[in-house]
Image (cartoon, rainbow, N blue to C red):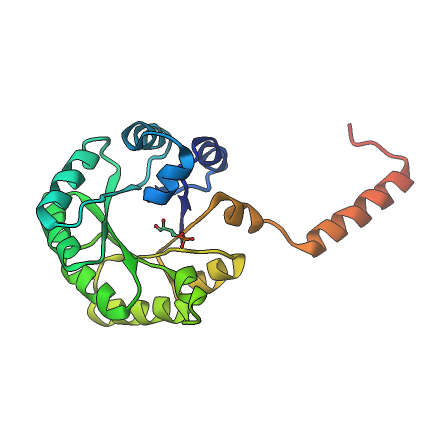
Length: 217
Ligand code: E4P
């Protein structure tokens, strides 16, 4: 499973990237707002750190304007994935931009039928939002499973990018289902390393080590 970081926070990206944990980055207008930085400038900096796909989202609503914004964003670096919303115009823009050889991440996917359309429009990635479905008492993980089954039934090559991940359990479940990629905030990725029994075991080992009176160095 590839790990994308869902943030425009450069120090956090750098930190995880140094550990080899970053296969790509996803941003969106809310994350750009949170960063407090100019979209072009911060995206260029992220593309200089991370080798894999860096999603940058358009904000236009009409296909031609989305295409123009997408082309502009794609000029930032060769590893830009243009992020387009799952609307009819977004699908039109997807078809055109992927036809030009650009990577496209179709976002705001909340149904298997939407994912089917994105694959037919040639999307490189489909981003089903798990957490936002869970927020309204729907089953976000079932959507990942449904898309996996449909894409496998027909051999679609669009990668399933499990998004809106809020918990470490979301990561486990998405990995079990076979999502190709997951994108999560840096704090969720860091939490993957935590287990109370690891902390407890370490505490015991260190207490016993003290009793030996030994030193390694
Ligand atoms: C995905 O690309 C989105 O940026 C993100 O995962 C949305 O997550 P949220 O629902 O926690 O805002």
